[in-house]
Length: 404
Image (cartoon, rainbow, N blue to C red; front, side, top):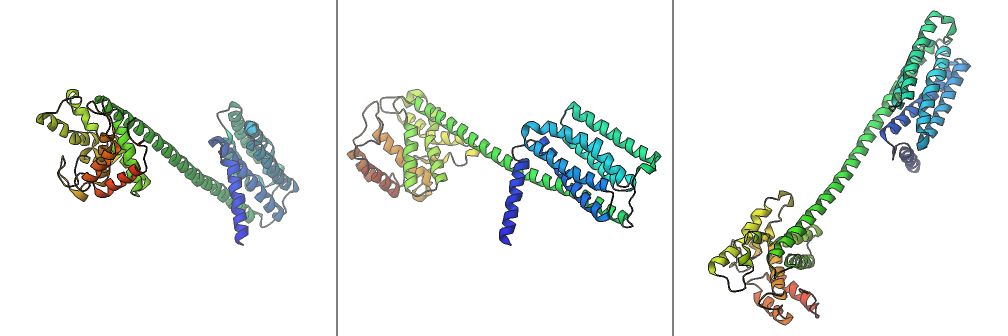
């Protein structure tokens, strides 16, 4: 039983994909109209056979079923859609409707419902095409003419002979109406779900695009920051790289590693507010000049605070100069009080400062850098993070991890 249900579901899914996926709204509505015609005509044929109606009426219903199936096949071929719509409207309005009308009790029978159905189908298949509009208008006039003619000439209409015909006709009408509304409601729900999926996909693409734009803006900002100091070119990107390595080895999640990389990339953004003559001064800074430099973490934090969509992006900028022993700035945080992202950037920043060329010296030899990291454990640096940096250095005997 389960296998049969699964098979039916597969057939339904395949049929839905064939009829609706990759087709515009008009083609989908046309397919719905044809499906309604197929089901309605076939049900009517079965009921007419049960009632013993006119063979001509039964043949007309069966012919409608076959013809609607043919139109459905044509609509599934993209280039034949317009032809199928025109042909379907012409035959339904001018051939099949009058046959069924005059052989199945006229307006005393179920034909008013067929009149409504044929008009609905004609309206559905119209796609701003003059021929289809003309077919719709002429079909409406023609059908009204059939009704007026049958009123003047009642002998032209074959009435039902079965005593149960009227009850069955009502049942037939209810079945057809339920069928129409059921298919339309089902289509509406499926269309809504499909539209929601498309919207979700579009939002995902937009989010990815925004992320790319944001990253590009961050790269540009990082280059702008580094450009202020001609002796630290590429510093922000290297600190971002080292921070990413440290965060990864600490077992942080992919999102956390990415966020720390972004923080590190912009950790020195506050230097935008520091005068160039102070940043590029070759001699020792005065106390006042050093105070200006020490203000860049808060400046950077305030700048990044204007980017609420980036969440904690300003964390690295504000606290990367805090020291593990509490003697850093700007807030004098100590130990675990310092956010882990800032502790990581602190180590990465110090490592790059020692392994980069400066105006007054070349990069420091790797052996001395190791000693400085060892000496700074527990005072300037988080001991665990410093140890991870030392492990990375042990794996780099050629000293490739530095400014080149």
